[in-house]
Length: 126
Image (cartoon, rainbow, N blue to C red; front, side):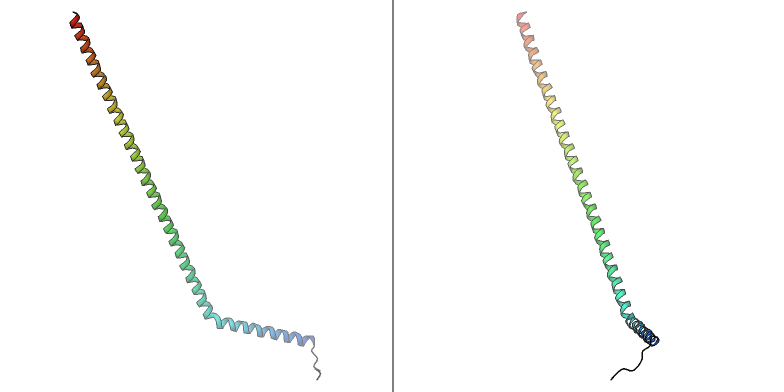
């Protein structure tokens, strides 16, 4: 059977416009139908993003606390090393002073013995 209907350009344009309007109405109906689920998905995504941000802030805080702890430990270690170095220097200085005083005492003792020998020799000669 042959299609005897004549489709004029005006008819075709009208049919295309009707089809486009039907598609638009179907799209709007689908959007309205999916609105509650879209809002739920959007709220879920927002909650996930907030939780992710909270975890990031928590990691950042933990990292800062760890850096502060390391800085504190390093400062304490350096202070202990400085105190030990100071104590060693003081001990060396004290040992050096003690050694010098012993040397002076020994020298004074030798001088006194020498003077005594000299005096004894003078006494025997004279």
